[in-house]
Length: 81
Image 1 (spheres, rainbow, N blue to C red):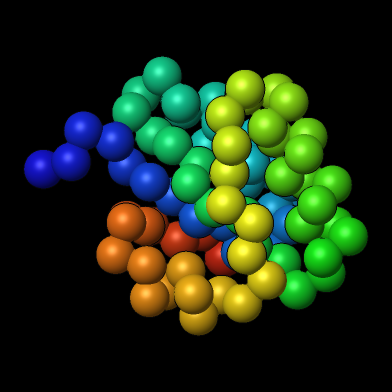
Image 2: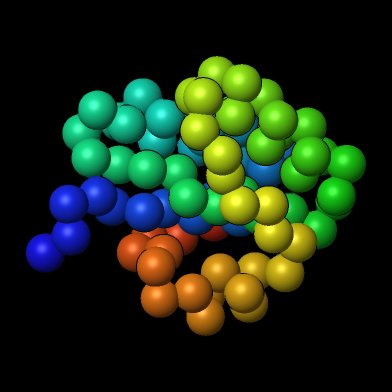
């Protein structure tokens, strides 16, 4: 088993922002937000920057969710679209 559950969040508007907050709250429980994904590059940049400032950790910024689905280092995907 892995030590950390690496999660990607797809769709970053209202519900996606809630997913970011919820999963970030679980960070002490071996949960890591590894990637954020949205086709709106401006929104992606805003959410990723805010997350990185809050968490102090970098996050992958992806516009094509197929890249997330192909990434073997992502263990779970939260779809908020």
